[in-house]
Amino acid sequence: MRPRIFPILFEVESVPQNLWMSRTFIKGNPTPIISRVCADGTLVEAVYDPKAATTALAIARPGAAPEVAADFQAPDGDRLVAYSPRNNLLATGSVLLPSDIGDFGDKGDLVAAVQAFIHRYVDLSPAFEEIAAHYALLTWVYDAFSELGYLRFRGDYGTGKTRALLAVGSLCYKPFFASGASTVSPIFHVLDAFGGTLVLDEADFRFSDATAELTKVLNNGTVDGLPVLRTMTNRHRELDPRAFCVFGPKLIAMREGFSDKALESRFLTEETGRQPLRPDISIHLPKEMKEEARKLRNRLLSWRFQARHEVGPDPTRLVPDIAPRLNQSALALLSIIDDKRVRERIARELVGEEARVLSERASSVEATVLSAVCEVARTFPGPIPLSAVAEAHFSKTSGKIGEFLSSRTIGSVVRTRLRLPTAKSNGTYAIPATHRLQIWALAERYRISAEAREAA
Image (cartoon, rainbow, N blue to C red; front, top):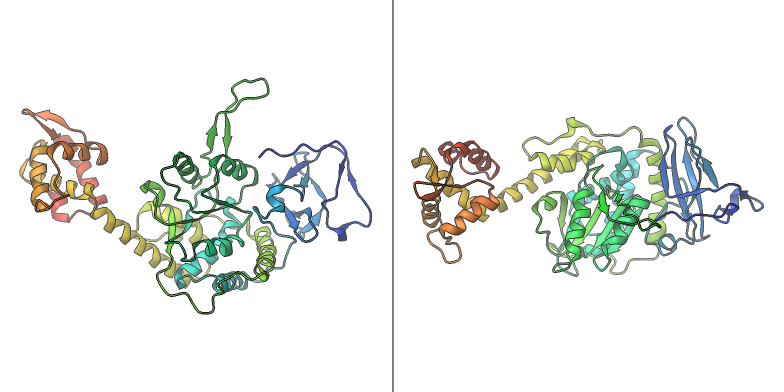
């Protein structure tokens, strides 16, 4: 979504009534924004009062108390104003903003208030409840980091996935609510124009042309500096490709998982519906939930103003003995958690997630074929014939129906999934002996037994 171009004379109808006793006019050509981090460190955030249907700017200058104003003169000369309160995304609640600058008090009290809110409306496991509460805080300072993981709720219908998105998402920074029924184009347009947190329900639209596009948005959105490129033309019909920034935190709800294993590794996942619903959880969300969430967003905005320039990646928070990819996704979250006991509980969850991934990988076709490759390598000091690998694989699987793989299929798995080259040797296809080091590295990745790795 491109910013609206306002007339030269801009009437400020979006300013809270308590700021002016009479109408105020801003001269010039102001730039409507949702948020901005200025070159001098000033933080500017739009606030929206849904009751009064007004918008304004919350401004935090370095060394000064935050304030709310109608406009702001940025160091680069831009005259900034908030988006109009009549903007469809704001008026419909598709994007939620704070309404004022609250008083967050102590960070520990703020975390406790966020977790209590989540506990009141959503039934999550104790560990994931802590993760969700801290992830909500992380979203308010996500732009201080260059890499992020995602939060996911996965389960069958009726297990509380959408409820979790609504409750946790309503506390996040500039949450943009969308669903699997949405086309992908407005998603990356809004993320580029507004930034903030994507809250996506029913994300598993399988057998759809949009699947690949959504996967690109989610894959590119984990690392700052990886925009989504789209071919566009200017008013002269000249080719004018544009880069859309999709980096930012994301909350996802889905029934199954993505086939893209690389994307799967980016999620911290809560499996919903594994226990009976707590009796104190309301079936219908009460009206006061929106007001509670709005007040917490006000407090969270105050925390952003204080913490945005103080937080950043802390390598000392890395979890030992888990994959670098998982550490990469979790480091931002661990970096903002002050309580060591909470970090240790989350670290145990990460270790458990790592064990689950390794278990799935060990039972995959690639793992069984690689195990057979390692076994054959023990008896063949030179090239490793694929025919012998097929025989070893047949022996390992006991020839079970559905697990038998022909030599041709074995060759396909070796080349396309394990990425090992093959070449003809003595009239038969084999893996060249020069690639034994690569086989060893793969065996380490798939947690093949030490004895088999030594053979390779």
